[in-house]
Length: 251
Ligand code: 13P
Image (tube, rainbow, N blue to C red; front, top):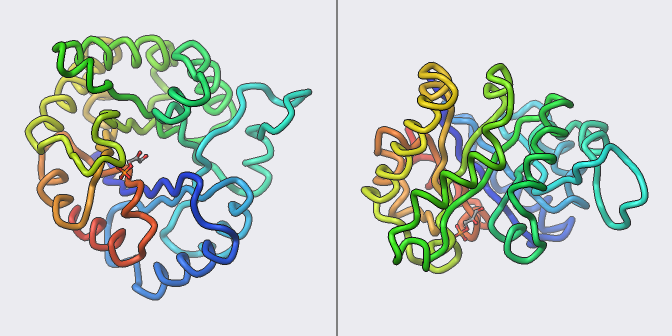
């Protein structure tokens, strides 16, 4: 049975005090009610605090990015070993905001994926089409090339450390979600691609999350689709009540 996961991508929100407060609020609501894995991804400077506060709970802390090199003259960057040293063992890679604003290409992401997996991190690999791609009917082709160029080179045995997050760019932060049917259609397409290019068992075991304007009032319907194994939540992960309402949608 593949894992159900609800992950909160805090993006560039919450300072250290707000991080503490939000985690306190999440823990006060006894997040162990769910069988799903709960992930939060605070900004780098708050990761240590987040790890400390969630120790012994069912909340996993992830980073939002990392550099592909082990170390070196890369001013402003954070390496895989720095994450591991503070007990962060999960990283989001390929978010559309990294692709759009920081020039991250499929080719670069392939390197980041390799570095993360070589160091036994779990990778939440994000991808998704832009509005123009969907309007021109190119969305399947775009998603396929993002996966082929960024991820499909990994060894079969590494897939157990990969979680996929399909996030159509036109649905991120816009209030416009993919309909549950659109999400299911794309997730089934992705699972089939994995079956054809990797193996049917990897396809069955890989969790595919949906992201893009998931809110408490639409989560259960989206998560109810057979190939949707959870969500990657932006705005609504910044409020404890909303985030945990969304988590409830998966049970
Ligand atoms: P929103 O939930 O704010 O649309 O963001 C989705 C997202 O980008 C999560 O990574």
